[in-house]
Length: 305
Picture 1 (cartoon, rainbow, N blue to C red):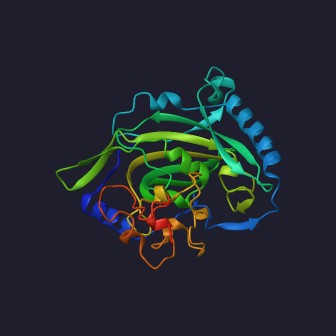
Picture 2 (cartoon, one colour):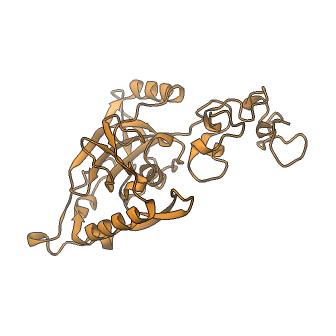
Picture 3 (spheres, rainbow, N blue to C red):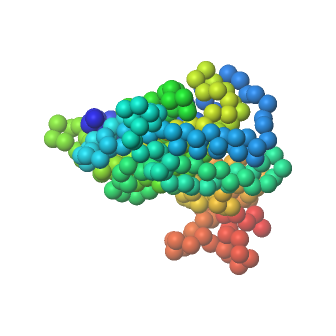
């Protein structure tokens, strides 16, 4: 078990720069820096069926160190350990009996929807707000594949941009709640009551056919995540929170491009391409409702007419 204490001055600095810059994402990013190969893509539906069967088998034959999470104090965490149910561990409760299932729709090569299950356990809910799938999160985490080898681990919290991590990480982190920040008399700070959990996902919610030195193509992934705190993001500074720039609500931010200029709305300060910045036509009367001057049902900031 461990406690997290960091310098408060540095923490404030990190928050400030997080509002200005996108963080550098490492192994849980959509484009891992150690990627070395992209193999031919298999049909999504058949590949998911194969992987889901292997995940189910894994859940039925493995357990995690659930007893270590029972007596955690409010400012503690412990590392996820997964092992096989056999021998001295024959009486352990299988993961299959402890996970909750969440379904995420993936569009395949034929534009058909293929629901993908991810399986998760929340060990501690957290005590604050949930991040959205568009926010920045201050997390520590551990990433593994089904052979239980670790491909990445961050024991000290780091900022990650939810729009830049793999889909399963993004969706699961949004189920956790942030913790409380306590400032100590010596200038350090710590977190209490932060959300803790882990998720097991098929490769369609991870890297799919992209291989790296430590992650083979088509690898289901396991992430343990501790959510310390979060920042609500407005990536382009246009006055519209990034989560509200996902117009179709599919949690994919790069497919919303109102003016078709190849810059998605969440990164575009002029969403409709009319030469007027979104921040100058979004809500000019300050009533919290996007303006629609011509009453055609399309807000001004998305209407170039």
